[in-house]
Image 1 (cartoon, one colour):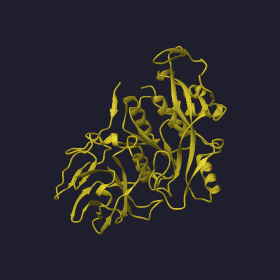
Image 2 (cartoon, helix red, strand yellow):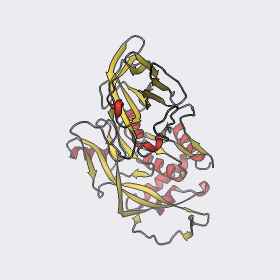
Image 3 (cartoon, one colour):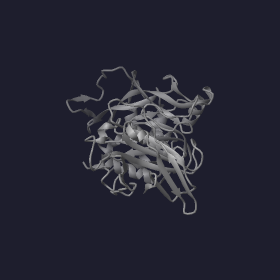
Image 4 (cartoon, helix red, strand yellow):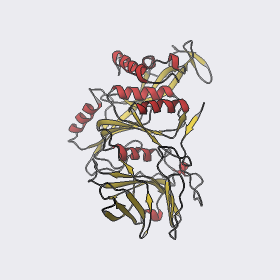
Length: 417
């Protein structure tokens, strides 16, 4: 098994230019990594600087910065300077950072954002203090296509179940999702190959997501352990910033959190819910229910329909919700709900009788004789479950729909790796 792992000291084709910048007596240093700053010996990491010509949330011609930094201290009181130019016009603006995630008493680092004006179609952006500044890489929002609903998946980390990757992507694709954004930290090589094929077919967009490695003097040994859930909320917010203009709604969750619409399409369901709340809904929060599912490790014997037919839903084990966000009403996203949002908007808890997410968490893998293989024991596929559950098929997904999902997978997915 080969593990594909994305780290800040590897430069690949999709990696933005990474720069460590030290604003200390005007000194600047460059490396192939993320963009990182140290203000008065306090380091911080610039995740992205995205230019938005158009936006659902802001006025035209804005830059949105996403940053990781130590909690509190002078960074929250500092005034920064941004200088943008397109070769003809020049614009200079002071700006400050604001917190983009709720406080966590156990974490020493968190997420910050900044929003400021820009010239139209900038070719250069400089950030700094006063006259001291350095150019940073400009990223652009996704404009290839406009859709009603997209998905933002949490960063994949040490991912090894290709069966889950195929199941999630194919279910969402069946229900009309044409923009699926996968953030990738590490995965086995076979999963990376599958994602690349989906990417080539314009089914998914792959966003590399990197661990942080700081050089020089450190106040913490490993910054990644000081960020909430491997910086998951930063990835969600990055997805909103880059893809929020392309999609009116974004489904936000882990790869194994799958939302199945109860009525028509996702869009019809979200719009209907929004009108019920006088068009002020920020996000729709869906309770998750754990799913137990059987599958095979043998690609030649894999059937998405058979996997769905084996699935059982634990209706008496609700889990924390995941959500769908209206991209015109949120600035930053957290793990279970948006964080920074427009005034007078509100989250809506969707009753489980009207909608729910399925958490495909418990996987049992069959050998070629149909026997479930576990680490500690073998048990028959028809063994009685120790928990109360009901079938997924015909209860929440009808058989014909499951067959169509499986047929779509068999025509397009490269599982025979």
